Length: 165
Image (cartoon, one colour):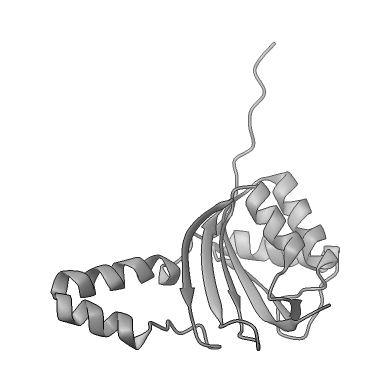
C-alpha cells in the first residue's frame, strides 16, 4: 500500500567522494529531482551536487510523490555519511505535515509544520506556556528553533592524505 505526498530534503555538510556518488545514485533510485515534478539521472545529480558544493549552498531534493513522505535512499545516504539534513513532508489523511532535522542518524528536532513548512504549535501548548510565564514561552520557542536553523552548506570534504612509506 502506498500513500504518496510531497516531500523534500535539504542537505548540507562535508561530502566525501563516496558520499557524493552514493547521493547521486540515491537521487536516481528514489526518482527524485531538483525541482518539483522533475527526475534526475545520476549524471545530472552529480552536476547539481557539484554546483551546490562549489557555490557553498545546501542541496535540496524534491519528490512530489514520496511514499509516506519518505525519500528512503537519499535519507539512508544522509544517515550513513553523517550529513546534515532537513526533511519536510506534507500532510496526509494519516498525519500532519512534519519537518525533521538530523545530523547523520541523530534526530535534532521534529516539529509539526504546515504544507509551506511554517511552524505549527498547538494552541493549548501556547496557552499553558503563557500561563506559566516568560521562561516557559522561551522554552517553547527554543525547542522549535533547531527545526528552523540554517543548515551548513554542502562542501567537499578534504581528501585524506596517505602516510609516507
